[in-house]
Length: 366
Image (cartoon, rainbow, N blue to C red; front, top):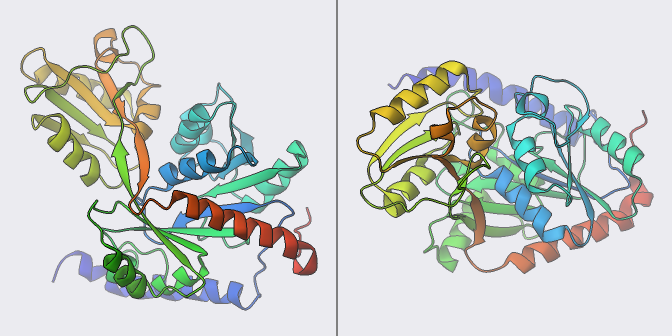
């Protein structure tokens, strides 16, 4: 018996609590509120690592010409509380690493707001902006059922399918796989490039998708490296098989970036691995500096993820290390080339939501 299997009784308790909570919402004992503005929710059923932030960015890029978009996140692990709108001066401590990443990327294109209470956050955003073509995208909100979105998008990791997982803390499930029925759209992420149409049908069958639900398959393309610190010579270095790479990560699932670095950059990898959303400290800076100094030769670089780069950028590294630190941006790729179909599906649900809003929706009062 594995050590993790000893947690099975606690998983039963967790399952009971989450099932009761969902039942209270399903039977309208607890209320879900709609707002007179299109709301798109993106989230998952498993803990971490399904690609929520890259897919949130995908939706922003897809719809930015049609709507004035605000991304609303709880700001996981931030040190502030309440409602905050991101500015150019916002730090990771203020708004969290993923919101800061998106605020930097979409400056002038989309706003980023953090608030633990998503319904309150939506009300504040609509009161402040008052635009006719607003859209609010909820990041990591599949379990935040106090808001009933126009479109509910569920992400499932191809390599960690929900129908083969277990409840927390034995497994990684936040709630029952049956709750996938709440999704309008399912996106299977991190797929191998050789997924066949038959695999698509088999996966949809295992998830138990309804005829009304759509399913899409995506994977990630790593783009050319970019400098963590925007100073000096920011051109990506010429990495060869001889280059020594210090890989620094603080994300939930490192397999994808590990495989890419080993296959496409160099196999000479020293990996310093931290937990997801790790708050880097002076001690960590010293550890990274010492590990980099210990690498042989002068052909060496530090490589990290885009999310980690946001946090590392706020740390006090030496000028030499600042010149050697790069991150790998991610681009979402559609396995079956159906990006336009996804956009049309989202627009369809948004149109239906606007049409039905005045007929049967209760708006939360503050």
